[in-house]
Image 1 (cartoon, rainbow, N blue to C red):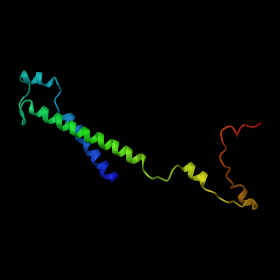
Image 2: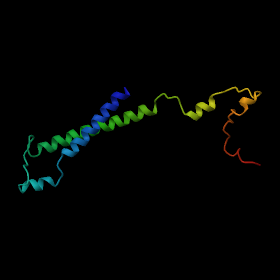
Image 3: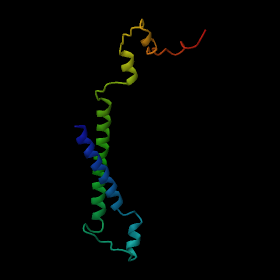
Length: 118
């Protein structure tokens, strides 16, 4: 499920980028009126702006929704927890009577303030 939402998220992001790059700026109409470019298009003079604006808004809405969905899925994911917590909960019995294993004994972490000598 998470991979499907991620694929939709990436497609929406690419759609937003593409549509924003294809749109004309607000100053582009001024240049077209002086003959520097054709102001008409497949959708008419103002039709392309409306179509592009609506398509961009739809892709932005999809991008925003998938962003929130991925954040929710990430925060509610069942994970193994932190490494430090797993090591602290793990109980290992070490035979300290054997001199070879005395060097391998790992001291447990101390609480803040307990490592200060008196």
